[in-house]
Amino acid sequence: MTREVLIVGGGLGAQRAAETLRRRGHDGPIRMLCAEPVAPYDRPPLSKQVLREGGEHERVALRPAAWYAEHDVDLLLGLPAVGLDLGRRRVLTVGGDAPAADAVLIATGAQARRLPVLSPFANVHTLRSLADAQALRGAIAPGRRLAVVGAGFIGQEVAATARGLGAEVTLIEAMAQPLEHVVGARLGAWFARLHRAHGVEVLLGDAVASAHGNGSVQRLRLAGGREVDVDAVVVGVGVQPAAGWLRGTPLGDGPIAVDARGRTAVPGVFAAGDVAAAPGRDGRRERCEHWESAARGAVAAAHGILGLDPPPAAVPAFWSDLYDSRVQLVGRAADAEAVTVEGDQESPAFVASFTRSGRPVAALLVNRAAELPHRRRLLAGDSDPPSTEGGLAA
Amino acid sequence: MTIVARIDEHACSAHGDCADLAPDVFRVDEVAVVIGSAPPELLLEVAQGCPAVAISVVDDENGVVLYP
Figure 1 (cartoon, rainbow over the protein chains, first blue to last red):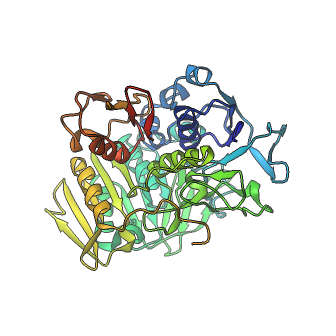
Figure 2 (cartoon, chains in turn brown, red):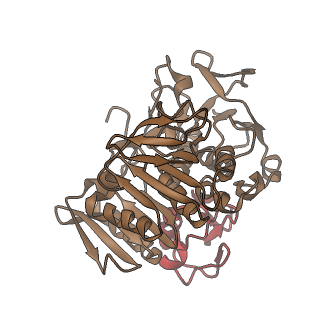
């Protein structure tokens, strides 16, 4: 019988897990061990509204401060987990052991990858936390030169927001097109054109070879020989699971494999969100960094903790806001063999359908948000029935 | 049996998927609001499709949570 639950992490997954436990009637203690000094908050606004308009924690908090007392959820703030003693099922923090628990949910998320060539410099930013966003906001102003390294969604959102604030933005991407590995070259080129149309310099198929400056970077030299003068740099080259604190345990240092109930290979230890690799609708296990996946994975793990059947796995989806465009991707475009654009790809709104063996596997929607639920329904109906188990041996 | 949908207004991000799938049941202003009823199957489908996991489906007579 699960009585005491310890949630390690303080993001969306941690929050949704706590909510689901309470909603499903769990009345034992719930403790949330948060590395950051603040209660769980929403990260998508960090690269958009918070960069644009600033914002204190209350503005992005997932729940009002009073929620935690009302729901008897004990927040342990500013305490990064540094180790896990599986024998005693104890999480170690810098301040000592966290309280013992019958179930431990690992929801520590991910951390931004860094580029060693840029690490020594003060004016190099990554964007993952509220503190990161507040620091980066101070570096963006009209006429200031900002280089964004990496044209993934975070890099593109930062480039778009900074450009909207009047910064001179250079976007540098190693692949031939932005997001080529996700949506293919043809649609990736649409993203490059979007940025160029807004006055961003987009440099493709190139990478930072060296950085020059005294304490702060002043100039980047790219592998192709090009030089870029900068006032600040943002690195958006992906994330890695925040599981270094688990090194040496049977869980490894991530991603942590879980089943459809969020169970890891260790009894009583669960994982969800960016740190975990969970089975999708077809049973294939993968780490998915989508906001929505963190929420759903946490709901599933809360069910697992309580011994309940989890909701069926969902078709993955995420969204991004770039300038005035809402971009949504539903399904797994990387599985596709063919892509068809419905409507005019040069128009402000279009849908691209990705297919494999004639069956739809994904859709990219640009300014066609109302179609998303229908596309999700189509994709759900066209794949195999969701498995509710997805055992770890699979 | 009275199965109803409820919106968690702090979790709702106003994506609008619910109103697109079931316009007679949901309307989205600042956040989604429930304006009607529908068969439990549709309520469950819409709730499971909510990207923010902001819709719960509840048996109003005994408070039993069906989703999430």
